Length: 202
Image (tube, rainbow, N blue to C red; front, top):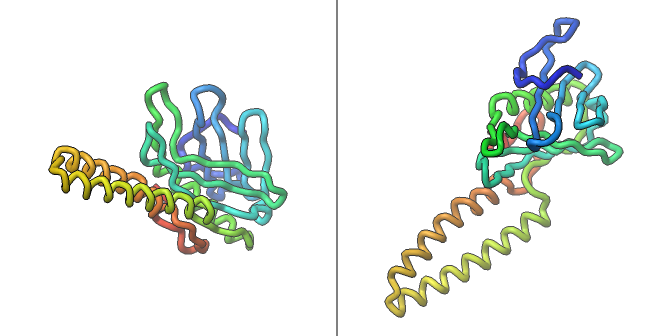
C-alpha cells in the first residue's frame, strides 16, 4: 500500500482509473488508507490490511456523524460477509485543534466505490442513517425534551419571567437545529446504486 495520499484521482498500471483515499482517525497512529482496485477494496488500518472483493461486501451504511470539532462529518461503514467491518470518515485530524474536512475526496471515493460494487454485481444492502432502534430512541428523547421545554415556556410566560422565556426559545432553536437536523439526515432508509442519499454525503 502506498503512502497516504489525499489526491483521489490516480491511474492503475493498466491505465484504468483507480481511486485512493486516506484519513487520520486520531493524532496518534498512522493514516487509514484505502484504494479501489480491479481485485476489490484494498485497505490498510494500522498494522492490518486486506483486499475485499466487491461481491464480498454485505452492507454499506452511510451516515452523518458530527462531532464538537467538526459539524460536517460523514461516515461510511463497510461490512463484509464474514462480519468484518471498516469505517471511512470524511474528516482527518491535522493538529490538536484542527479536524480538516475532505468533502470532495470522500464523496469521490464513496461514489466510485458504489460504481465498482454495481459493476461487480454486488447484492450488498445499501442503507443510510441510524439503525431503526437508535433512531426511535433518539426521536423519543427529542419528543420528551420538546414537551419539557414547552411546559417550562408556558410556565415562564404565565408568571412573567420573560427573560427566562427568551432563554428557552433560544435553547429550543439551538436544540432543534442541531439535534433535529441530525435526526432528519440520519433517518433510516434504503437506497440504490444509482440514487445515493445526498443528505449523507458532503
